[in-house]
Amino acid sequence: MPGVASTSVSSVAPIANDCTMFVQSCLNGSRLPGEHPALPVTPEGLARDACLVRAAGAHAVHLHVKDLSGADTFDAKLTDATISAIRQGAPGLPVGVTTGAWAAPDPSERMTAIRSWTQLPDYASVNWHEDGAEQIAMTLLDRGVAVEAGLWNAEAVDSWLNSTLRSRCLRVLIELPDGLTPIQTAAEADRLIDKISPTALPVLLHGEGSSAWPALEHARLHRLATRVGLEDMLNLPDGSTATSNAAIVTAAIRMLTSSR
Image (cartoon, rainbow, N blue to C red; front, top):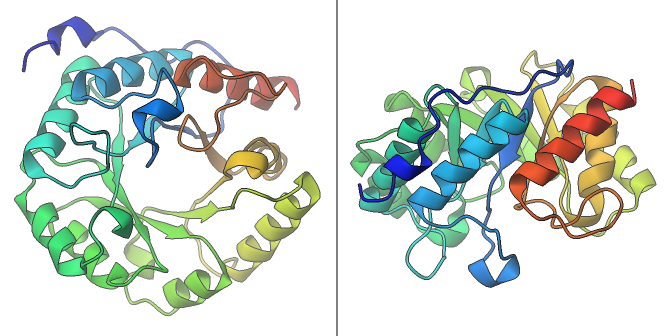
């Protein structure tokens, strides 16, 4: 597709560092373009950022496919173009997408969209508190797409623990909300992690807004996978505005390696 070649950095690999923790970069989320000047929206922009965050040390990316207005979409043409651009620009980098209900509240609409994709992501997040989570997860698994179980609260944890698909998930995402203090972030993380402790799946802990950097620190302390990026935070640990996803990943790697 036009413009993709300019984003191709096939030799890009993670920078040399001693961070052994899994770090995922969440490139854009449901944010609209006006929320940050460096927010990647187009397939070309997402491919460029995928290259840059991998060079900064990220091990994988999570993204939301966008339409021309910057809104989230499951449209097959745009999804295929986005996945293809990243595969060309950052070959071998694991790529995940959202299946959040805000973009298509009807589960059957989301399942139809997933079945229409020809370029498949490596994994997709499924929010277990949303209607149709089981069906969405099964549709993904039937297509060979791994499932990240997004658990936003205790009720979602209980629902997932009772799911017949639980053991087939790739990992669990413990997702903490904005508005928490650092102490509240740690307490809520521990509460949800304790509830899923009988399972053997890897846990990825991350926050949003006020809980984002404290969640990363809690993940460091407990040696959990984590994620950072413009979806979850717009500021660096010192409170200054982040210039890019790569700058956020760089700050995260620095925290994870210098605080041990």
